[in-house]
Amino acid sequence: MQRASSWVVRPTDLNDRDLVRGLIEGARWRHQHLDWANALSLLDEHPFLMVEEHGLPVGCMACPPDPPGVAWIRVFASASGYKLEDVWSALWERVVAEAAYFGIEHVAALSLHPWMGPLLTDSDFVQDNAVIFMAWETGLPPQHPHSAAELRDLAPSDVEAVAAVDHRAFQPIWRHSPRALHLALEQSSYARVAVIGGQIVGYQICTATAFGAHLARLAVDPDVQHQGLGRVLVADVLRTFSDRGYGRVTVNTQADNLTSQALYKHLGFQETGQVFPVFERGF
Image (cartoon, rainbow, N blue to C red; front, side, top):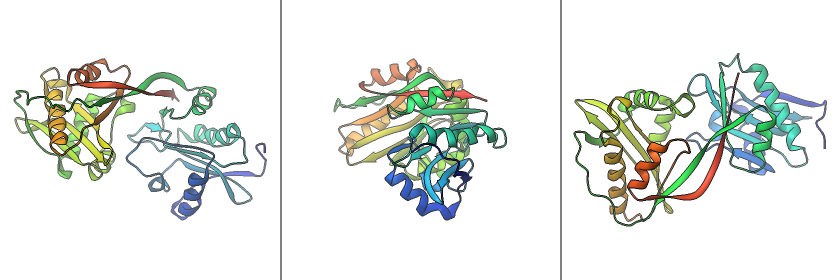
């Protein structure tokens, strides 16, 4: 079935929960960003668009900016019986038309499926990075390195200070907003901050399931980098999860972040071979 003139593209709202849930669950092509936010929690954010034919959902796309100016393709789904490229273009054209209105200056996408790369390339995205995965499975956690920093649990009241560290440590597309960090903390299994002189200068957030632990976020303020704080935080993670009986801890990082890769390898992480391309385009 080709793209039809009867298609209607409209924004979603909270009343579309069942429609969007059914669309995503039954979609032939489905992309959901590796994210802290559930797709349905974004329904009243913009742009979150749905294309319909005679009142029936054909596809949806969500890319609300967070932090301001930067949007990731967080959700895309295309129903069976429709041409993937037509569903994508109907939604993406609307995003492009409304990008300025929603304050979107830059869009990024993590290509988790072979079919997604060609869609992005045809939409003027450029692949300029990748996310690589690493795993620690040595079974012998590193000794506690010496550091001037005090480690303590990350509390909800720390999130604004942690977001400031995150902002300074990362380029715009990789930054986490306070809202995203609150969601991360709610879902975390182990989260700590590094404190020097009463100031938070680094942090980590980890999740855990029955299959293993994952170091989901690590950042150190640039003013105190190269002083071993990253190693202190990661070593603490490995010892803690080893004590909890976990034999595997994973992490992902950018392909161009050679400093973080060197840190992880020094502590016994090895690349798993899992790589997801990152595409970007500006407006």
